Image (tube, rainbow, N blue to C red):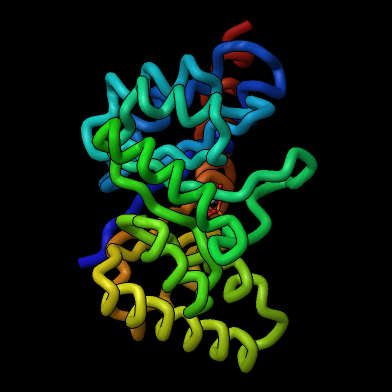
Length: 239
Ligand code: PXP
């Protein structure tokens, strides 16, 4: 049975919009776990645009499932990860101006540097995953660099302009999963997955965990809005 990792970065984005204390990612993580999430994912970005070190430290203490830290392989973030010890570090490429992670790591080009990051995190006893495109060469390079897991980037599949292209993207993902497993790597997948396209993964075997953020938080806002307005309307009606 596949597992669900819930990415709660958007909760922190909303909090940062006012620079206050709500909504709190720590509360959101607890609710996600109570609702059945198998893990919580956060991305501590270099520009700290959403998740803060405070969140990482508190979530390390409160998450009862598994805490997956998405991160760039920079000296500063590697140091923080080694200190906090999440259950897994997923290394992603990071650009300051991007709205979200735009693609997978280029492990073929940056293999030596990434291997150093893996060795560093392994010394801190943290398993490491690489976020990569479903490309056989990247998978082989991830294996060579010592990654324990790969997270297959499903963004091109999710953004495919038509069904035919989407089917082709899914076949590439399927082949990537098979190769990764053959090499002994664990396999996760994520990016752009939603309540509709997730159903297409019924035909893909071997993915341990799906990491999903945007669609879950977007649905929570819409489905929770009616209750939130009713509660405020009732308070206002008493005035
Ligand atoms: N996996 C990785 C590596 C990501 O960077 C993200 C986005 O933060 C996700 C999964 C979740 O993607 P989405 O928010 O589109 O569900």
